[in-house]
Length: 296
Image (cartoon, rainbow, N blue to C red; front, side, top):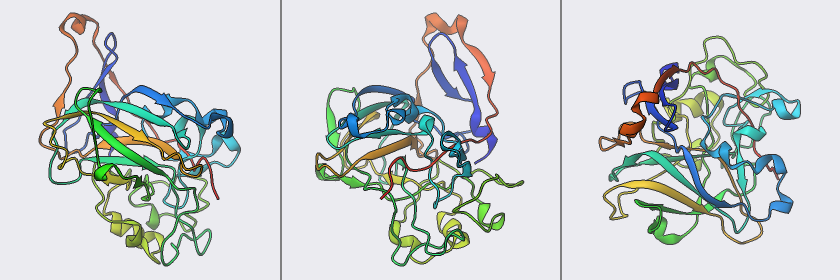
């Protein structure tokens, strides 16, 4: 995705972030954590217990915390400490969006987690057939709400499997021959669009090589996309993930994005009393990000 995505108006006093770029390019992410219980904390690396990682912007480089610096691809998900929060079996996390989302009949919210495709031809990047993941199941019951108190469950209250990996660069397949072990961001790499829904499933990638995977993503950064159309809500400001208490499931949460083409997005303005302290900060962020918290 274009670096324009990273231009933001920071309301310093209010702590509110408003996108400066046109809606077609400016991806909006969940921006604050309301509540959480990571559960099974004794079995989770303490480095993955910082919940603020769920509301930081995704970046395209990872592994620096572990001495394995590498580019984020569908075969190499984010895994640095500042890129993920891991919610254990039986835990939950609630996030707030900086805008009100008007539910549509399409895909409204994208969930980006630390899942990665198994490479059948490491490090060349060829998905298994059928495609599968090398990380533990990322499952959660997902609920959304307008006021942070009353919740409506998606998928009839059944857990949703987060199975679609993240591809940070949309044209990387033409620039690398080692997407499972790529240590340098190649010149000319173009950021994928985190606000563009991906409507496929894990099976979309069956037997595909990296170039075919990027063609299937068609410029999207991937992620598991959810529809709010059946909730009956007029607007959504909050989302909650509840991880099944089955002793196996977890959620390695990287970010939650809003469909940037949603015509009903309603920005939350800075409070009038704080306008005097609102300042402009143009952020041109280069990428740096990571890999799955827990692998099989």
